[in-house]
Length: 140
Image (tube, rainbow, N blue to C red):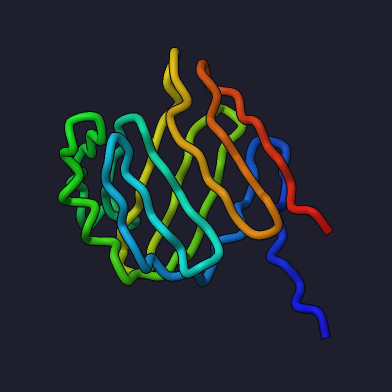
């Protein structure tokens, strides 16, 4: 029996990334802030990002993560959390919600690739300079 790969799903204004239910099993820090999702996916944020709360009405505070300065300690809060939702907007933004109640957001950068995600079957989504996405779908 062949295991079916999670699907990368396209909508008019966004892509639903195939990370729902995956757990953050490793956090990587260099000149980017990275999340390893089980042994299936990875998120790498090179630009500034924000970490806040899904229920912003109750918990409105957000923290800026700045990987270039290795100022990402607040991002440790999502370690061992499950991904509830992960969306790459065609405008170049990224939004990931976690079972911990946190939401991680990254915006596009005018000059650099702000973030990348990789996943099953060779899936790759890159936020290109200026805000467009480059998308490589999984191979069958």
